[in-house]
Image (tube, rainbow, N blue to C red):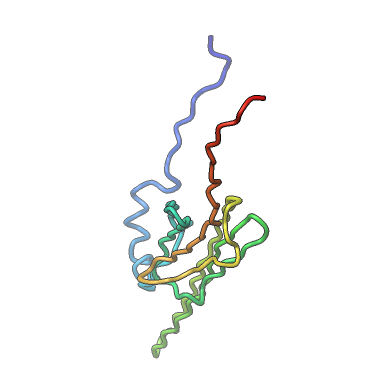
Length: 147
């Protein structure tokens, strides 16, 4: 029984015919600098002694990142502004690109908060979260005499 709800097919915002129409302007305004339009992918791995957070963020510098720990929450954020200007006799072209993102993760209880280390190399931010060393409880085997 149909209650009057008709499924609606979602379509793209602009049909493909507009792609060709806007192409010259997109090429002219393209600055050649790739910006991060989504939140970067994150891989989290666990080793015997630590957790490793690896975040792919090419095109940034280590100065663009902030890593903050507040209680059991670690927040990784980045912000970058890029400005270019091109002047000619007939025109002046200015480009402003702004890139930002923020990711937060809840830390496990067994982390040494004062030993967290972060490095940015080859477009990848790597954060090492060392685990607390839990001493193995030694079990003693002892025969108990019943009296």
